[in-house]
Length: 193
Image 1 (cartoon, one colour):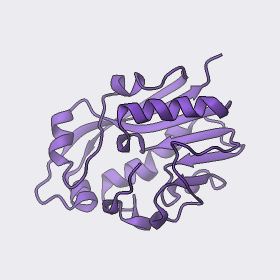
Image 2 (cartoon, helix red, strand yellow):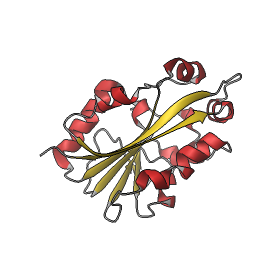
Image 3 (spheres, one colour):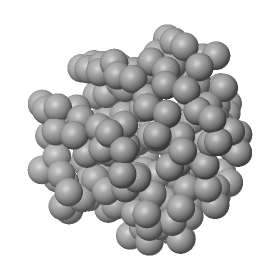
Image 4 (cartoon, rainbow, N blue to C red):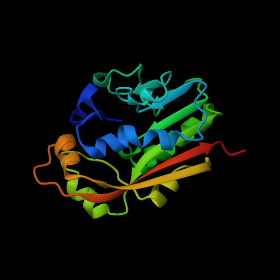
C-alpha cells in the first residue's frame, strides 16, 4: 500500500464541511448499532484514530506514520489478536486484487467479526470528476460485495447522502468541484464455517 500526502496527516477527516462531519462522525453511531465492540478492536486504516471517539479502546493500525496511529503497519500483512476488526474508509486505496488478498489474509488468523465501513458509488462519473490529485479504486456496492471472499454478511446498513463541493475543496483542493450522490455501507461480517 502507498501513503498519500493529500490525506493531511493528523488533520485527516476533520475538514470543516458537512460531508466530512457525516462520514467521520455523525453516521458512525448508527453504523456501529448492533456491533459488539466490547472486546479487543483493531481499526484497520484507522489513520489518526477518529474511531476512538466511539470505541475508545480501538487500536488504530495504519501504514502512514504522519497520522499518528497506535500501530504503524500495513493492514495487508498485519496480524493481531482481535475480537473485531474494523476496516473503515480504506478499501478505495486498494486494487480489487489487494482487497481480495486482505480478506483472504484476515481469514488465515482472525476468527472474530469484521466491520467494513466504506463509501460506494453508483454515480461513478460524478465521483471520478471530483477525485482530482489522487488515484483511488472506487466501487459500487455490488462491486465491493464481490471482493469479500468467503466472509458472510451478518448485517448490512446503508446511508445515502450528497457529497458537497466543499468536501472536495477541503479534501483535495479541487478548484471547481460539483456535488454528487454517494452511499456509505456498513457490512458486519463473520467467517464462513
